[in-house]
Each structure stands twice: as C-alpha cells, then as structure tokens.
Image (cartoon, rainbow, N blue to C red; front, side, top):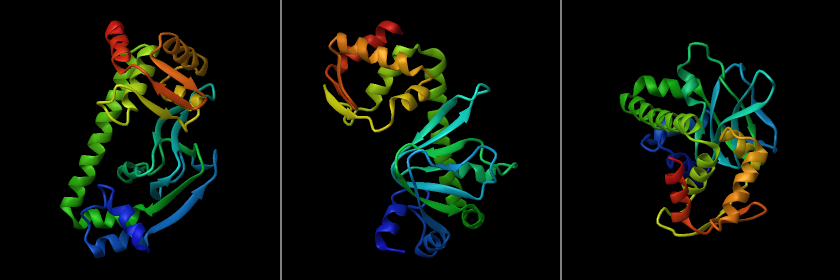
Length: 229
C-alpha cells in the first residue's frame, strides 16, 4: 500500500496506535472502492462482512419507513468509519442501508481480520469501545434534539454546529448534501426546512444563495434557541 494510504488510516482513532505489523494486516484486508452518486453500498438485512472508512464524498445511512420513505440515520463524512459495530452483532447483518450522497471513495475492511487483531490486543478493544461510546453519546444527543426540540430549533442547531470556528461571529457554509437529505436527518419535511431558512433570512440572521448559507448573526441564532427553549 502507498505511504499516503497508511497516513490516512493512522489518522483514524481505530488504527492510530497499531504497530506496523498490525497496520499491515489491516491494509492487506482493505480494498479501495468507488461509488457513484445514489449508488448503494449495502442494503438493510445484507450479510455483513466488511466495515468501511470513507475517503471522499458522503454516505447516508438510512432505514425505510413502513410507507417506503427514506429516514436518514446518519450522514458519514470523509475520515469517518461506519458499520464497525456490526462486528459484534449476533445477527451479523447490516441494520441500515447505505448509499452515496455524492461520488465517493472508500476503503472496505474485512471484519474477520480486524476481529483477529481485537482478540490479540486489549488496548485495541478499549479504543474501539471508546469510539463507539462517543458515537452512542452523539446518537443520544440526536434523539434528544429530535424528541425535545421543534423543527426551527433543529435547523438552528444544524447551522450553529456546522460553524468552522465556534468563536466566529459570522461564517459561510457550503452544503454539498442535498436539502432533502438534511431535512430527513432533522426529521422535517423539505418544504418545512426551506421555509425555516426563509424565516431566518427575513430576520437578517442568515443569507441563502443556492447551496451557500452565510450565517450573519450567531448571537441572534442563539437568541432564537433561547426563546424557543
């Protein structure tokens, strides 16, 4: 494997502390893949043999509602892994479907090889548990937002959490993710999502030009949250 590939893997917490031999075993079990926009990686119920590290693009994890509507569970960004927790499921099947939001490149890693490393290393087991705990904590926060906050609060939270610098008074966002997918992630309808953005624009808090959103008044957005709380 190329040196830059090793660097990419070592930047992730799962692989950061592996010695050269261990990392070599992981890389030997990794295959590079490319997905076109809207192409599926796996479907709910498929046999799970691999987990993944996203290099470029975006992947959405979703489930279908009884009515056939896609409910986005998570949007995976470059540098993130996903499906690693499935290694510990008794059913050994994927609990969600995954497809590319954008043209994407990723690494496919054989679960059996990584499980072998876990059986040999208590430190690696603890590191994996720590990472999954952080993801679980994030999922609990998401559930709190979806159950305790109204639609406007969720959209404002998205704007604030997307800030490149938490100390910035104003900033611009480039949303590559389609609005309908963002809306699904927030459990709001696309038209509701657009209407909330329009309302915030009329208040002078943001400006929307296509996929570019400029946050003009961070304190104003925070004030909107405090009023709705």
